[in-house]
Length: 210
Image (cartoon, rainbow, N blue to C red):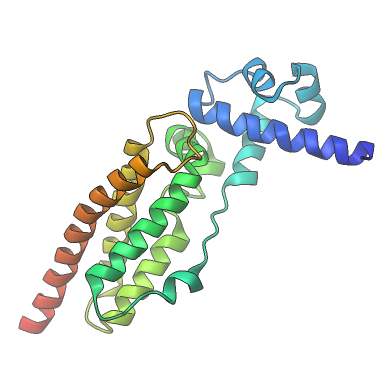
């Protein structure tokens, strides 16, 4: 391994450790010493890579904020005839993705109001998720639900999933989606899906009556 590879590996480990510490303690309470203990290096090493705590924090946000999900994989499983079944599938898939990214999600929600770089990204309502649900609603009910209403319904839907993810995740090892967590999430998602389907049906009924 070259010195360059070793340096890059250390840089990545510091970012991963900082992500964990900032998520658990919040920006204000987290210290470089905490991060060093998590990573297994001393503060001097961290300061060789980052100017100060804020620069490290902002690089953590930049490094981990992007959310990636396989749209085609989800699309291929949608019926476009049974909205309840489709939204259940979408909700469970989105929950899994958010759960895997719980550390950065906590950072955005807890520290977002204090950092312009975070506020501008609005990660806690991931725009790819929102757009996906809006497109689904428009596809299954074309020209029935207004773009504004579809957007609001989508935001509600993603908010329910996000809150469920945060509420269920109360144990250590946030990257482990245990059977217990999966069962609890599925039950809670069912309630959220029911509410969203009912909301959509109200809009469809109003259109039919009109």
